[in-house]
Image (cartoon, rainbow, N blue to C red; front, side):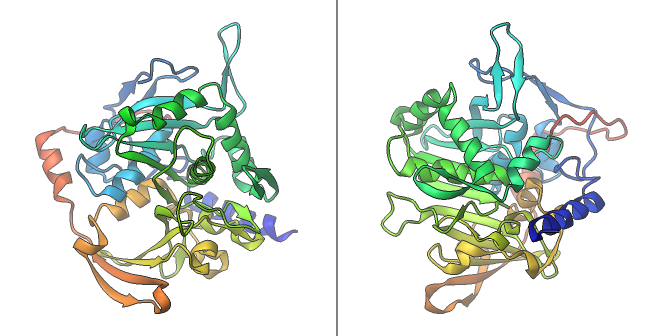
Length: 390
């Protein structure tokens, strides 16, 4: 059996034994009977059904979403998670545009899907900031096409790069060729809408698509550029040549590529493509390691270091799909606001390659105050139906 299929079988077996309670890459929490039913927020949206999911207070109570004013990285992870069901608002952000790029509305009014791929634009609720986030949904394990696109080992040429992972390249190209691309791109490029800059965010496959969009936009010819990039548990995307930010002097994107690698266990998805030589783009690497119940170690590697382009490595730890879902990243990142304000610098790596920080995680006071102000009693004895909610 080829090595790729051996590793894929290993991850699949890991998921079969660990993921049955994750609810298709969601979290372990039971669903409340207090489901919120949300119609599309975007009047131009097509082929998008109403979504039903728990009220925001329950998400915040269970640390599946950042509250208003929560730590910035936890807010980015929250958006990367909640784009899966087009939730709004998410922390400090309101969904303005939503699009399933795999859907097509036929002449007779019916909708067909070659796959499901949500993309949305969120805008800061703080009018003085004027920042926007474009986010792409992650893999849904219920859809065969997501498995195919996420685990292709083949490559194709895209946006001037010769060897881009073919599944991600197809979805990024479908976004670029889609009927609403100009509408989305012109909105992001209009200073009246996004005067504070554009952020791209995504989890897993959604992070890979966000990276490709950020890279291609930086090369010119698009109405907007991505100012910051944040991905969570995202695989490598190119072979032979590392993708760069064409408008940055050092080729690096501002932001972070974040993944979990504990003492014995590893989120396997960001490492899955490494044995075939797939590289991550030039962006700072953040490795999250749970040291104890209340201490999280953050190891940073500079965006120009070889480590940041190739790690994590699949053989370095036992794969554990339980730490891959976006909600796991939300929970880990809710415990501190920033490295500089809440964490202790313990090691400076030689030659400016990076640093190691220990963060003592504290109960987020914003979560507590939000729940007190928006008190809701949850009845978990009657579970609502799961509908793609993570």
